[in-house]
Length: 260
Ligand SMILES: [Zn+2]
Image 1 (cartoon, protein in one colour):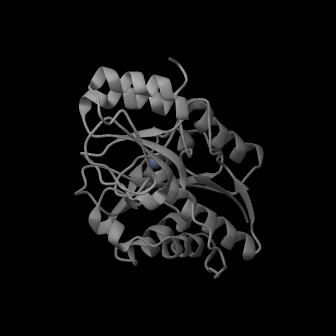
Image 2 (cartoon, protein in one colour):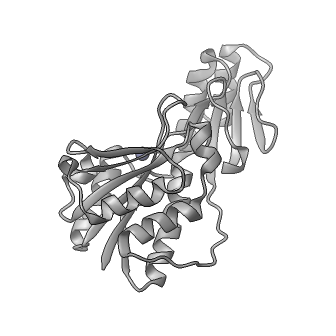
Image 3 (cartoon, helix red, strand yellow):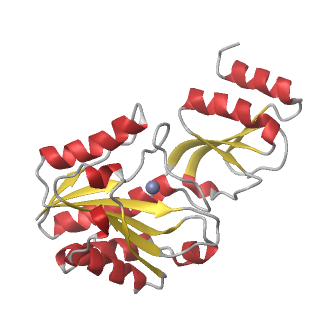
């Protein structure tokens, strides 16, 4: 079978995924690359329908569906992780018109067998990648990255096996120790530093996080920039403008970005 695998979202900039306890972009790679290796090891053809950086959301989405369509895949699977209010949890799969087919039911049941709540099959007719793919298509929201309950159960190998088995009826163990890290993230502690953080994120082509609202897993990132004062993660941190007011912070950021 020829299967299009889409690790939803990019690794920085436009169409970067949601951030909760863990980052969606990272987990889609962690699970998706396992799914790809396993399918290949089982003799299937895999078309990678994603790229790590895109110039815009439209570039990102159209690349995914064009790649699937140009390669005439039999089945298209877009892998995502959900984020909502830190209380919502569980697994759901979106299809065009909410229609179901064998592989959708299998994957949903297999992931829920790992202990995740079954949130059902949802009508994703408005979702770009479901609307524009010619092949049978599904978008899997594996679980919630901002739910403690879901993240405590999270295991990339188990979810990848659930997906592969749901697609082709069997799975396989492979040796892959690769850990996917996001290059950089810009954090801020105070709303007054949000704009400075966004300027820096534009310069670095990465995302921003308000760390008063989220705790981040420092292992997910190569470099963590903290803009302005306040508490911050301690490892790998580059602090910019920690001892000044909001205007001083902007100045430090512009200096750092060589714009001033
Ligand atoms: Zn997503």
